[in-house]
Image: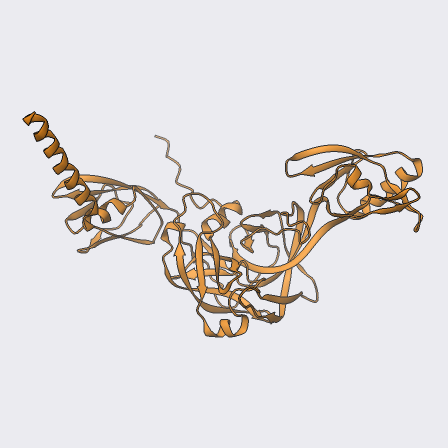
Length: 428
């Protein structure tokens, strides 16, 4: 009986001691040190530490540690892998893997760009009733075609644009034969038969569908990779204005754009940049991808912002800190300007996600001109401590001074640019 009481007493003391240790400030700082750190060549890294803890390096990819009372900092010297050993009272208590990536830089954007997307096939954006001799009907609806569907083939032939459709419709109507159609839907592809009906008022045959094969708009360039001329822009997916579905891109083009005026944002009413394509409509790049992280492709012309045209290092998601930052964007004509913002919160994401930061516009000049974040500003690069950290993506409807940002790490990944490349092992 006494032994059981003794065991329970000791157990209780150990539990209280463990809980106390966990909530002890130095221990909390120690537990918060990550097991793995990734940095680029030449970049510094600092972390808080419990005062009694010391750190040492295993190899030589990092420059000498600088140990202060409450922090440890180091500079990544050369690409490769390293280990940092943390010791408490001379006893090793934690190993931290350090991955040093090859120095990587991109040119920040900020330019206003015009965007034209060509869809894969033709997009169904609505139904309409054909006024036939037997009443009003929609052949497309009868065939089970829905808004947001994409017509990719008719009678075994590929459909690329709206003008491809009409000849098949008239021929099928005159021959009184249904069209064999291949439809692409979010859930997958399927086939259906559609019989065009004759409009008695116009004496033509119709599908009973509204279709579209392209979309246009404006946005902001985020980055340009100087070695490959690959770029990223917008920071979010382009969706069709009617169906609200992401546009499946066949190809597309970007051109220079000029901001003509600003509709200032207010609570509940996001503002907008009003812009026009450059008068010569010169194509400066293609569009190969439309994803949740923006549009991506390659440039065929040089684009300069006139503010920061030299390549900048980037920050990975775990390196972004709360505090002051800047964005590059256009609010008048085609002049790129620098404005102050605040990183309100940031998430050190391990996997790609579109909402990595919350930002707030603090620049009086920008607030006076736009009210904060407006449509068309999406893609504006965010720069902190001399590094490109991400892009503006969405505005908060009820607070136009604030919105979301996406980490640059994920935009580069979507562009097909490998920033994590490690050196290959040499043959022995």
